Length: 188
Image 1 (cartoon, rainbow, N blue to C red):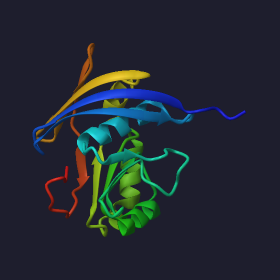
Image 2 (image 1 turned 60 degrees about the vertical axis):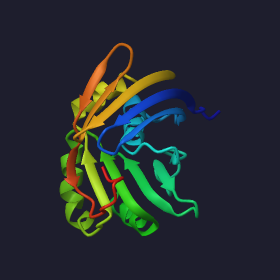
Image 3 (image 1 turned 90 degrees about the vertical axis):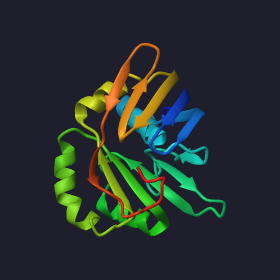
Image 4 (image 1 turned 180 degrees about the vertical axis):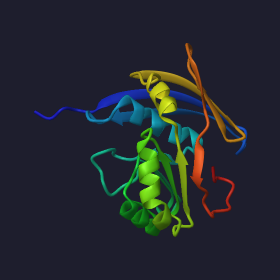
């Protein structure tokens, strides 16, 4: 018998001073049985960093050909493709061919350095790709926020992220490994 996904409900208040976005979002996330709390919360962080009511979560780990999150325009074209983790270079090349912008929120502690060193040169040829890295201690602390029902506040200012709930707060500073050549105001 296959294990079923766990449903997480999230009330997320985002105050993104950098982009001038002050919104509340009610989200439902499916957590695949093999997905860690760390990965789930990195997906939540990716949403907060690019908050938009049109931003949607993908089907998750089991869906290889779709992003972890995406934002489509009215025609169905993918404006923003978001992946979390350490995706293969080939996957990002395909994403760049399908989306206007591609953003990776890399996590995995020391594995990030190995992944980046192996892929940096090839990824530099993708001008619409932005790569942000999260320190291991940050994502481990982020995992502690993962609960079935969550109410989170996220403030973003000067590329600094402050995430909190009723009992804890976390300062997050993503490191820019590769900035996108994209000039729109939605770029993070």
